[in-house]
Length: 135
Image 1: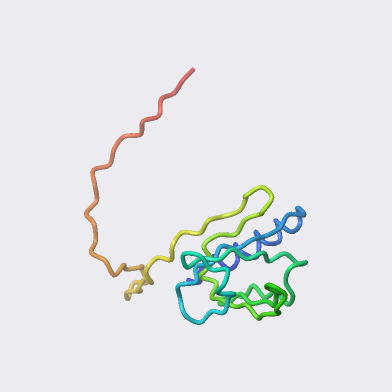
Image 2: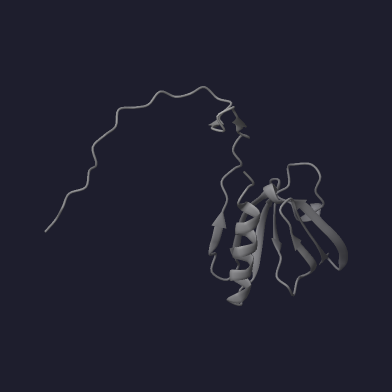
């Protein structure tokens, strides 16, 4: 199954722009195969303004995000894998989404059921619901 992150990113990007806010991405820069302005990286993370007025040729594809932008007056091609995005949010109100860290790739067995690479955890006793009917 493909990741839902690229679809969520595109949807939230459109939603933020449609509401006239400024979309920002928080990106993990610790991986390989990326090009970001290193002078703005702190603790292996960078925040990028990806609003239509700040970038050109924005491509939010399933595998990579790339665009052209200016940093300190210098034009730069920025690209990074979609799985490096940690969050997308609107600068003005902070609304958006933080993405969970990518889980290990699941292997498929012959019955097409996902099998984790870790050991199975035995089922715990099922507890009764704690809800009460109030009239």
